[in-house]
Length: 230
Image (tube, rainbow, N blue to C red; front, side, top):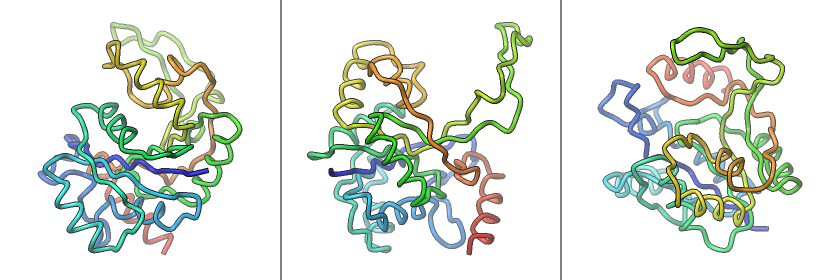
């Protein structure tokens, strides 16, 4: 039951207002990307890692991250595409004989072994699952004029995280079906399963600490989390 983690590190991080891509920013002396790679490296549930990054960053990742920190499970470093779903597809194409695939944002440094175990158990049962947490905030639907249209029941609203975990054949087929159409509205992989997979996606508890580094303020929060957990 081979499990492969696809770690996405091809994002430009425009909201970070930094010349350095967010996944390569230093967090307590190590690149943000290091932390999620280390968790997958140490997890007995994960057999290998596919790292997807910008073509111009492949050599940097190899020399400054994989070799420096001694990651043994990273079998391939492949160039990503213009959009997130292109990068995911590149990672899927690099997988070899795996049964389940964990798709994770390299800008989320706080994935844990507990999340990996929970999502693996769920994907074995349902074929598709995503980590997330119930929303702490009230959410509003807006109309095209920026006016409140409706308020969904907060108890049914989740904030979605990664990893998103799927049976390999299911997510690969969904990607290939979707690529025949306009994919610009696709923001995560579970949307592909919802539209083209033919199965329901199971929500699995992640962690409120499993944040995505997106803005400069997130780095400050991440430093506090590392200090607390150390």
